[in-house]
Amino acid sequence: MTEKRTLSSEEISKIVDGLNPIDHKQMELLAKMPPGKRIYPSLRASAMIRAGLRTAFKRKFPNLSPSEINMKILEYLTFMDGKYGHA
Image 1 (tube, rainbow, N blue to C red):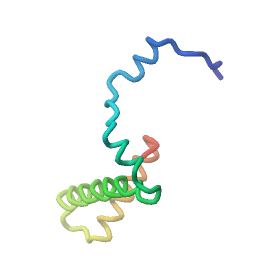
Image 2: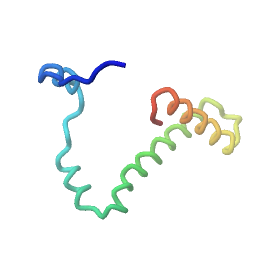
Image 3: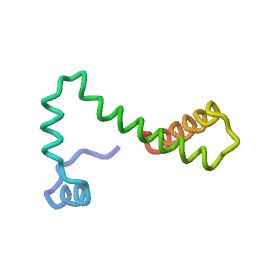
């Protein structure tokens, strides 16, 4: 196991270089929302991703039933979660 060490500002810059800048307006809007509603944007994004996958799988596998398409989506998201740690 490697020892922890403090990163230099140059090393930190290399890590964060290329990341999207913080959307301060979005952060303010989320901060003003009650905690229970802060999850809504994530849920909407998740639904949009699943809808896109459903459309793609329907085109790729036109003979599958809606249940089989849903299983393909679940299989894909499970694979992505295992490979990248997120779906």
